[in-house]
Amino acid sequence: MFTAAALLAGALQAAPVAAADATAIAAGPSLRMGRLYMHTPRGLQACTGTLVASPRHNMVVTAAHCLHSGLGGAYYTGFQFIPGYQKGKPAPLGVFDGATPLVNGGYVGKKDGDGEYDYGFLVLKPNKQGQQAGELAGENPIAFGQPVVASRTVWAYLLNDRTAECFGQTQAYLFPFDSRVRIDCKFEPTSSGGPWYADYNATTQQGTVNGVISGPMPGHESESVVLSPYFGIYAQSLYQQAEAAS
Image (cartoon, rainbow, N blue to C red):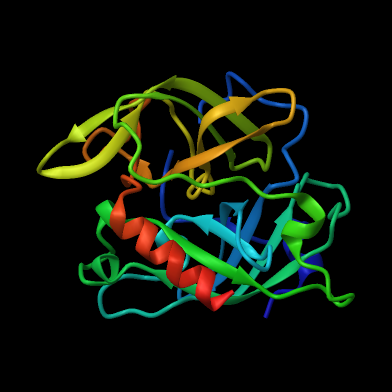
């Protein structure tokens, strides 16, 4: 079992996704975004997670494959979320353990997961002082049913634990046969779950979450294109389940 100290020391492996060009690396991430660690059958893995508004201020949105292994598998264990994580520096607000992961049933119905439903929520436990992560770091609003073609800002952690930003216009992937959304950005393993923001404010580093990095376009892994599942009624329903569980 890895400890938080071991995690911060870099004893981790890449998460199973892909996908950011290091052309726009920020000095430091918003406290609302952080590193998400989990124990899987392949060992310790890392993703990106983001705090979103919830009744108890304790909910992170990320990619489903950061929470569950897909058909015939199960939820991972040992989740730890570090808001505002910066490599080599103390966790600014501490480490928050995961309590309840939730993914869509459509995701677990397919071997290795269904990319159209590659989103999930993780309800966090409070810290030892009884404080919730969202109370300390703040939260992002989340939106559903937004236009497929829109301006979005994408953030995530890279393999070296630096953060990267990409801005562009989204497009339909294979709509209506596949409801995912694409953007011309290139990210890396451990960037999975990185937030896609609408109306992003560079000064406050805050925006409305309307997608998460799922991975590269299948068959085009070397290209600067990443996908997000569309945040429609099914994502909204899962969010409401997570709200109830929080």
